[in-house]
Image (cartoon, rainbow over all chains, first blue to last red; front, side, top):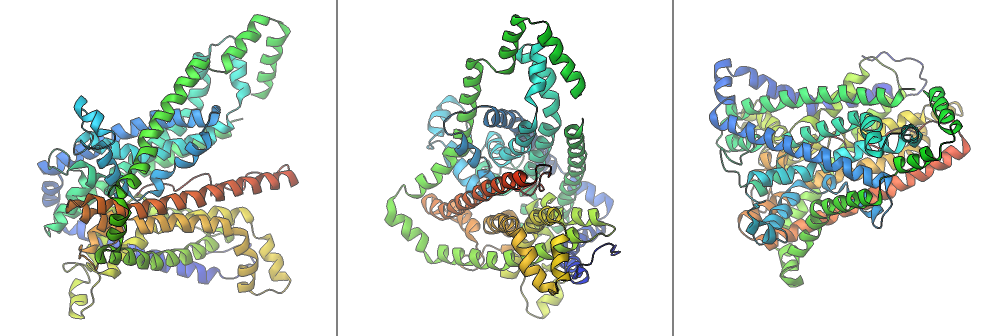
Length: 276
Length: 321
């Protein structure tokens, strides 16, 4: 691991030593600790704890809401990226700057303000609730919070790709007689697809683990609006460590599978860009 | 591709078909109706999901006037939360900056086997749910944890105390600085450092006077992102804090407690400070990106063949919470 070549610079031993020490102490040891404790749980117990009715319901809420939110992000994120790159309109730069707001805003504040906004007395809720659209303390609220939290991923993955897209190719398609819609579907869309998928997967992965914003807006009702991370939190409050760890293992395994998929997607997207 | 493209162009123009030219103009721009519909939808979506949530924070925080706002912030328990947040970020951010500099130096300036594994492991905290991150530290240091008995016997408190909050915060903000610095340091190469060393500078002098100035904007970028997350972290800190009012409540936890006590205006008052932090972070970030784009343009004017200087800025805030 520490075979150095072609570098006359000093400090490799020091910096590498500190890096490995710090990484081990703060990330690897906690991670391994969790894995060891998870291995101490018998398979039968793990299965019972990880697939209890309440756990299954929480997976449904978590994965269902995350999927819907990620789809919404893919659709609106593509639209936003397109509008920001291709069109000029008043306020464009402000919108572009504020796209990262969900990244910068603490999740607790996001949950608080969205719950208030969509609540019965909120700025939007006062119009939506009479129409039967309840955006707070419902599954819809979870989707709203997750859409907010994941909003920048698709936009920011797509923007550089759209900027580097050669307009000439579209011109050629048009000169050859393709209409604008056909050009978009057959020339532009395939070039954007890998990036949209990457952004979608990033937003999805982020949504699966999200906790802070959901706590405020979901109401946390077991079997209805209880997400898996919240159930882990509840198990810990009950000092049910085995229960909490079993659920955590399920989430971790899923996160890592998704991470692998994202890496593959990014490679695919990179290949797309580097094609001659 | 480019050859076939030229052929197509030639074919298109040699036919001298004015109909085709008209069609081509129609084909490369959306009709004004489509264009303005798309812009309207995008603006409406941004208003609902970005602008209104932001304005709502300040609107609700000030709904009962400045006096109430001020008294909410100076409430002893809220004040304690503000102080704790500053302390925690004040420890976690410098630690991660130190780590980021060391890791980036080792990874960017040297070749060794297993580099990609190391980078993957540095990114690991991004793919862990914050609640699970907190759980890891409970498993290590909680009363039933690996070191729980020993810590209890020696009367050291980590979980449900400030050290646990610091550890959880360091974990979730772990990759930020390293992740920004690695590509920037890789892009600058090692020639300048080697020149400095040849001229007789010591390793530290080289680092301070050559390396650090060349990565300062990337470093600043990493620091503000790391800091925003450190001050705003909720899930991981919530698991390890124990929620002792006035002692282990950080600002986000204080917001939750006030909200659960139905003191919503006070919750918004504390939240407004965090929203302000987010706006400042965004402003600095936008400035740095603008500056980087300008520097990049300048560099390209001097060296027309040079390739992009690395993806530090074009991948904002990366994955996961």
